[in-house]
Image (cartoon, one colour):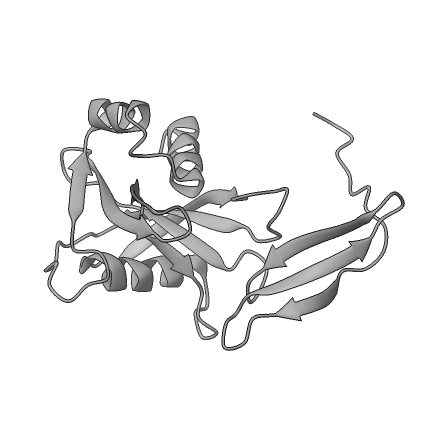
Length: 178
């Protein structure tokens, strides 16, 4: 795929900000019609973390998504804080907050775009290293599952694992052989 460029025209301008949130909407006047995109506090400011145990099983959290009215299995993830110097720091903090587990390092595999038709943000995919299991007490998502490759595939087939960020991150993991 060569020749991929940026065919857009005009600057993006903020047209709405969520009060007390880091969410905003931008508009660009293109040649054929105005375009809109949602953004958070900066481009590429999210991180999703893939945590594997010694047997190669992947950590997934049960997360209720109010927008969908359902609970899904998802990889731990979140937005960067202003003082996060890099995606590994964001992944480390989010892993602890959401699951109670810690990591001493990580490797960035790349970025994914959660919804390239609606969102202007990218999410860094980080594979955790030096993971130590912690307590699931007083964490955001205490219901946790460790799934092997067959169980991951079954969860996808059953519609339990259908979060776009998690699916894209797992596809990148497989494609890179990490």
